[in-house]
Image 1 (cartoon, rainbow, N blue to C red):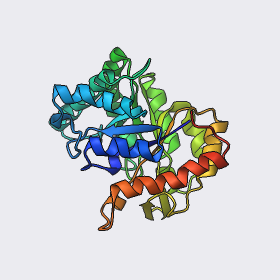
Image 2: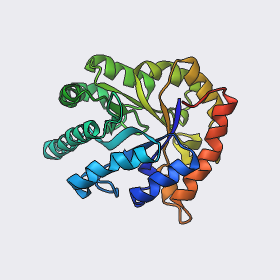
Image 3: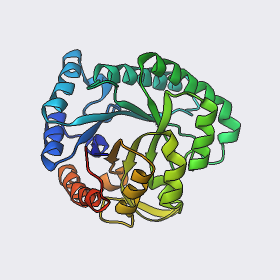
Image 4: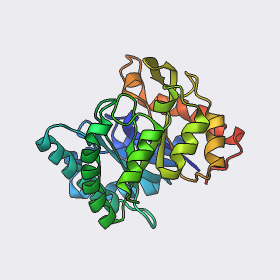
Length: 280
């Protein structure tokens, strides 16, 4: 397994600052976000910048684990959805450009919608996921959809049901266990149900249970990283465990994105050691 960091935590930090900082802290991998809000937004990168970024990452010894364009697949407005689909396809193409080794980084996106509405919108999910899968498969890219609390797909069982119906190796899961933790689902259950579908992961920290919960910086909350890592290892996971910092945390007046990355590393890197996992 590798320890990575998602630049979701650094929307305004230039990539020439974030990448060297993460490498200096000791992280193994980085996830780049290309949504409009971010310094690395698709529209903000010209052709030269797109060519430069993979070299920057490589020069600092980091693995590019994922390219994130997290958006709602269940957008109700067809015109807006068409824009989302075009952006996801562009992100897939970018992932191919940014391939480091024998396979491209994972592309992360979302489902959206509201709790309870999946049965009525299942056909829509299958159709739209199919459009994504067709392009992803043609480029040799895996798109990882993230089940999310407060969305149409909240639980491991719902995510597994959807993926079984999509039935494409190009559509997998970005397994962010925090959404299941705040629903009271045990680590072992989440891991057992999601690992067969998992292409990438996120971890953060949290306190409380829905509807009274909050996401936190690693080390501030209740999450047992050692137990999580042990369960992932026992399940055969060998990919990247990527730290994500919620916008809930980023809204703090005292939020420092560079310091937060250091804090997270100091919490999670020792958990790898305690779990007996060699990062490689």
